[in-house]
Image 1 (cartoon, rainbow, N blue to C red):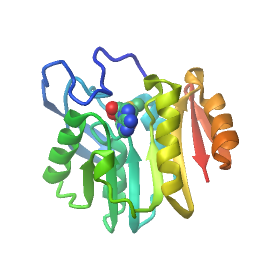
Image 2: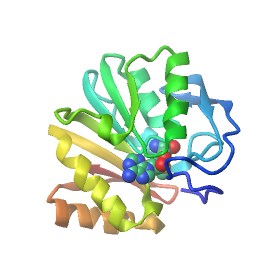
Image 3: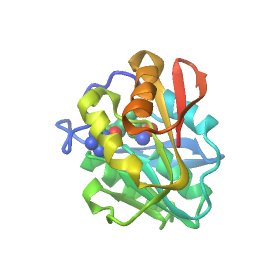
Length: 200
Ligand SMILES: C[S@@+](CC[C@H](N)C(=O)[O-])C[C@H]1O[C@@H](n2cnc3c(N)ncnc32)[C@H](O)[C@@H]1O
């Protein structure tokens, strides 16, 4: 994850929106997405996110899927394009990011994307997969609370796929998940300074 000029993990970023469109490749096709300053990686698909997208298996074709910390939505959009029969929940604290993703999804006709705040995901929803480039820079306490809140909502036999930069603590996060959450973690791959973790 590269340094950002603004706090992209706040609800209302301070910077002016400077909204624009970018053309990126997701799910094997070129799509036009809405991006803006004040959200994570406004210049295109982040390097870590690209590593995750390369390594993760295709999402389940149906059920509820989660992009945890969606930003402008590269992971959620990929899941929605690849699995039109699934419902893709995309959560973030950053309202600007949610707005951008809603616009992109509407323009692409992806009616299966729900870009919402965490509290707007109904309690009973269980996820057939979770994909995340999680917010490491919020600090360990917030990150741990986030994973503690969402991992129990994985359906039986479902997995979460995370990408974490090695020098931002991917291995210690993997050990924490195993020890504190009692889940199996496979170091699925490692590339360009990032590790992809598969969490059972
Ligand atoms: C590393 S960025 C990844 C963004 C996007 N998934 C991508 O791959 O470009 C992490 C995201 O998590 C969001 N975030 C921070 N704290 C959060 C929280 N408590 N709940 C949900 N999302 C959060 C940030 O606003 C940011 O958009």
